[in-house]
Length: 129
Image (cartoon, rainbow, N blue to C red; front, side, top):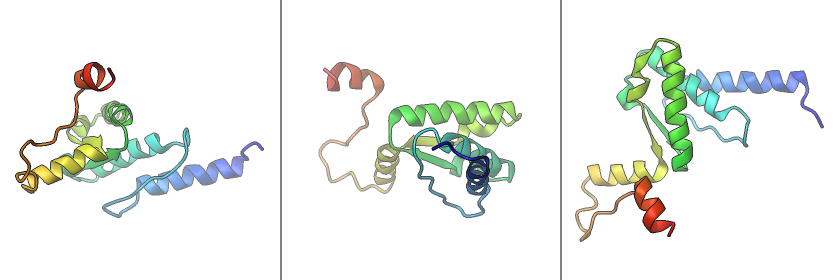
């Protein structure tokens, strides 16, 4: 069943509402190719253009690939709109953020070895092998 023009307009309006929501935190849940990344790009740009400090702005994703994609998309989106501070937005996976929080709070000191997130080389040459 094809999507009607009315359904598409409703979806676009919902994306704009999410991108320009005044709440400090929002969560976007949607299927593939529904405009999540565009909504996040617009959200970050909107926050930064309204004076929010980019170093206090976090974008969290589940996979390293999607975090890398969002990082590039947000930088490009902001640069195209003459806003270079998009580079200072913190974009990471949920796991990287959790590890950063635990490390900052000093909650990993009880362990003999500090956990680490594998980098690309380690993933390819150790984990995947």
